[in-house]
Image 1 (cartoon, protein in one colour):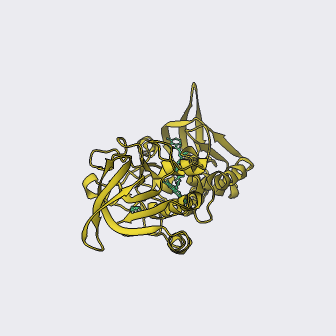
Image 2 (cartoon, helix red, strand yellow):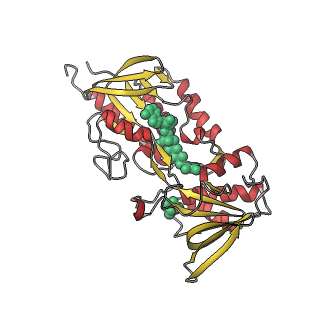
Image 3 (cartoon, helix red, strand yellow):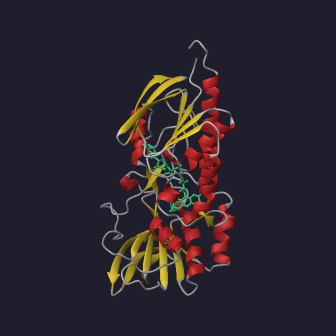
Length: 352
Ligand SMILES: Cc1cc2nc3c(=O)[nH]c(=O)nc-3n(C[C@H](O)[C@H](O)[C@H](O)COP(=O)(O)OP(=O)(O)OC[C@H]3O[C@@H](n4cnc5c(N)ncnc54)[C@H](O)[C@@H]3O)c2cc1C
Ligand code: SF4
């Protein structure tokens, strides 16, 4: 008999969606999360509020976690890592290490949902001084400030009077090999810009962009309100470097609409860093023996209509492990991966 259980690796938005969908389909689920809490990067990195309704990340993800915790036949393993995977579809054995103990999880299929990490803006090709100048921060640092209800210059604790976002840091960059667009950072920067304007109405907010890439309904939900209601100023330009000047930052680049060099003083600079595969995604690709694409994300075996199958039968992937994704993508691919996992188990012959 095949094992009925679906193992889900990663307890972020995609893993939670997958676990919930598999459980709704009546399958026993084992959810394996390396951290000590569920919710994924939005909780671990203290994101403030989420698109489209600016509802708190804890509330949105808390609802998913509570529903899952109440699901029958769902086993949640925290502080757990998969170290080996043997067998094949219908008959996998996962070796799971949890601190000093270990256990074997027998499952018929696996959903890999190990997510992303933020691009490190301190890489040598980046000229923005993330590690040199305290008032140069990244999207996730501003999220944590907004969540704490206090946006202040790390250098002196004062509220900024001028703050700008620099788009496409670590994305759409051939020099570093990340040619892809990270999908969410135009929307997230615009959402954070609105939050800054709400918390600090006196602060001028600029977004320097190559071109704005709003995702689906975010155009009307975030982009236009940011400009029309909250007076966020969008400037088409490429920022080449950030330098200290007195207690401010000199942002240098080119205004591409006007076709001329640009220099502008800011109190804080926020780098819109892109998404890269998490270390867990890279490691699990090796442990589970599934192919990665040239960027290190899990390669979907049959796009465009099957986005969740991997190169190994019975192993599916979901969310940002597959590439840049927003929460709606995570909910969709999580549910799709779970449906495929349950159906593949149910199609394995009993004698197999
Ligand atoms: C600053 C910022 C703000 C954002 N705000 C929004 C927003 O408002 N709206 C929106 O739609 N999207 C937003 N996003 C995108 C959103 O965060 C992602 O779409 C989402 O977090 C991806 O979910 P995931 O489950 O695929 O991965 P993750 O959230 O990265 O979760 C992966 C989980 O897997 C676990 N894991 C990793 N490796 C292992 C392993 N080996 N074993 C076990 N567990 C493992 C991790 O601990 C983590 O819990 C934002 C992104 C950024 C950068
Ligand atoms: S979403 Fe916007 S900021 Fe992010 S990589 Fe794409 S174009 Fe650049």
